[in-house]
Length: 272
Image (cartoon, rainbow, N blue to C red; front, side):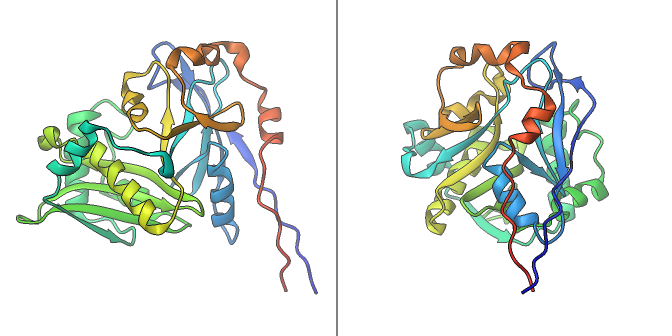
């Protein structure tokens, strides 16, 4: 029997740029390419270690003076909806869910543009054109789905979520929705519906991206019960934001070489 040794992924660091979450801070990311036959196993493994996917890249915040960005996920078995979240579900019973292969459409892009113009007009995606949007949606080397939510009566597109299916959960890569329906709390509804999907599929987690203590943009994630964050190389139930004050200190970060050395990679498998 022939055995092949896996080629270890190479990790790189981005140049510092202004942090979008904490004023006066600079962000930096550790990243690696996601490609080839091992892409799925690498994505599954690194997602459990705080990484996120963007197209064919896996990344994790690796700032030189801060370690406040923490990957967050909901433990589905421990989730209990609040009264407010129950009302959100009831307000959106008029929506129909449709899961498709990740394929971009003009209707999606039109909704995406309206969402950006309303919510993130000065963000990093503000100038994204149709071709770049299609690349964001379609360039995925793993099992992904595009989940659309449409009005049952008018068939108007109300919300979209690009979702990765991991071996232990669903990962919300990117979502956007109609800004004219603010009262419907569509962002919250998308998360609630993904919890329902995870239950149907028997998956234990729903990955929400990053939570940053002290950032108003990220506060909504802490409203979900059963939330865990990845901090100090382990998953643990979320605590009060003040409990993470040390993460804002420059001495809270390890050198890049140590961070990379501690990353656990998926085991090799015999072939041939």
